View 1 (cartoon, one colour):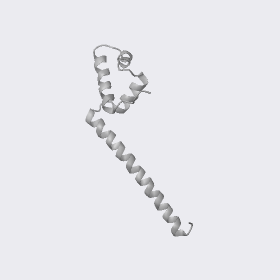
View 2 (tube, rainbow, N blue to C red):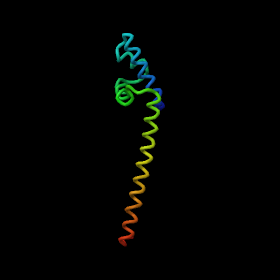
View 3 (cartoon, one colour):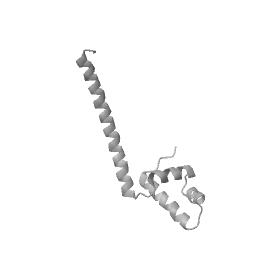
Length: 91
């Protein structure tokens, strides 16, 4: 199974396609040369297009922190519901 490229690698590959296209290659040829499908290329471009490497790293860090905070909120909400049931005597 192929490993998933890191965001920094994706940004580098997107730049590589831009350079190849500016040199006159078609998008299809340029995408093929970086070893991904056009669907993957356009998905990457939608997610990472226009970002610099440091911005991508920061984005991924924020997404990870957001996921951690969402889990914490879900856990605390569950604890609150359990305590509310206990107070009502439904334990």
